[in-house]
Length: 392
Image 1 (cartoon, rainbow, N blue to C red):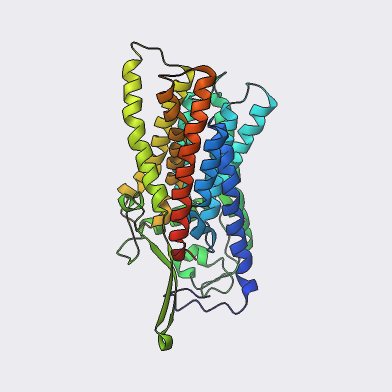
Image 2 (image 1 turned 180 degrees about the vertical axis):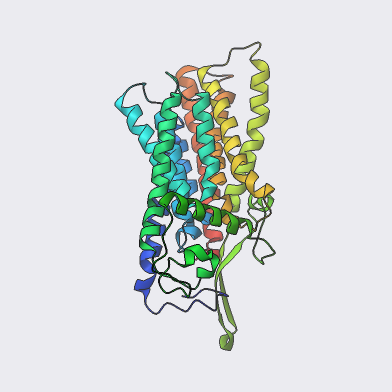
């Protein structure tokens, strides 16, 4: 196992040096599958649609690749969708109940964890705050503004905790110490500028400095890269990123492992959005003559909010100049996955309810969804196995 193109990083001599780190990524990536099912149920999707959502997550080669690497993206993705799940539970809780208090804290903790892993979680956290403020899913009393501020404070504390230990325990220097200013180099044991009498700044000042340096480094990630890609490539399954390569010149053998999206999932997401908008606009136009049912209202607001979440996670990468890669699509792609399952659930109901009702409608819907589910599962698993050679 080595790092392709990284001469300064030597090969691991023992599996025990890196396998535990891979297990952490695999653990969080694995948990994302059942969590996706639970999120589907909280979105009021049927059991079949929620199982489909879990299967889509399971067969997403983009997530699979990230869970096999010693990176933080599987943790980021897990905490992002955990934040969504906790927020959905919060929105459906009763005011002044233990459940509302519990899910307030849970949402805040999950959000703080997500934001601590990577700042790219901000798009989803903003989406949660937007939906909370508008009380879109709160069928009872809306979440209070004071409660929102308390949740934000809890989230900020959770965000700060790992940095506290990082600052407290990170006393020694390394090869990357040139990346910080002289004032902070004086605090690192082993640095050429180390000064045992130097007075460290307060934790808040140190934290602000670290955040500032992270943002500066992120903004400086510019220039061409052979495996860089753009958002408009991700949504159609393009922009593969080489993660490992091995060459045996004497045998003329060359092996490569790529981080690549599941093309079937990508085009299913685009198709789902393409189907949703004509139906949604027609329903909005028809509301003047026909009152929308609670189910139809839920379909509309969920669909529009899923599109908003999808766009919110793509837009930063469309506007910034920094180098971007295919795995940046992971958070936004999840909203599209839910949209696929929403269309799977609601479009057959909207169509057949025009001709049938009652038990007859339920029987026909059950058969129609079964046929569509079989087709989706066949396409999903075939695509997964066909392109698995790029991920294994």
